[in-house]
Image (cartoon, rainbow, N blue to C red):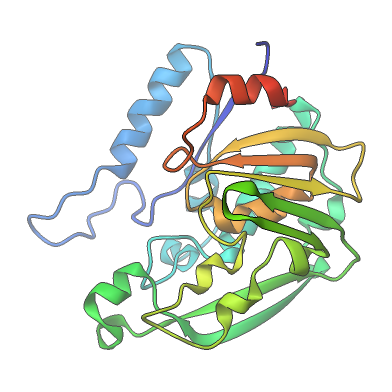
Length: 248
């Protein structure tokens, strides 16, 4: 359909070329990522490997991730956004510099608030619990966020539409999932319209759960951002993308 495709390879919690697992335990995330990237390169598919950026910045690579969960922290998702934004320029997806500046956001830390899926399996006494940050733009924003499959229709500022701060209350280590305060969780298809960026590009993001924290940031670069999670999406993917006709 003439729609360009960019594959973005997310970092693993375990960095490349490391020996951190107990004897007898194996994990192939990085190996599979390397093999996939090789095949994509051979077939001429554009790709961005975020591992290169993530491994080269923090002295302690583990700080990108929650201790009790496999997901990256909101600050890591923001760094991914900073890394991705210049690449998107080639596809007509422009990002205002202010949205790439950490100082453009008010960041509130909820201490000892999050027990991730790994921590839930072994209990809070094994590795403690995690802090989680609530990021909110200091400038005025306006979005709509629609998930028809779940009857979700939200509009207003970044916080009112793309964030679900109610997921932070009350503190509930075993029953709650504060990570889903970003984007609400994993939905089959969701549509975000940035009312303040009518000239922005249109983007379709084929996503997994790492995209929960990335999606609100990415929406600032677009007019329309449609996210599709293939674990739950049951429609015709090719027909859906052709109908949306995104820039990327």
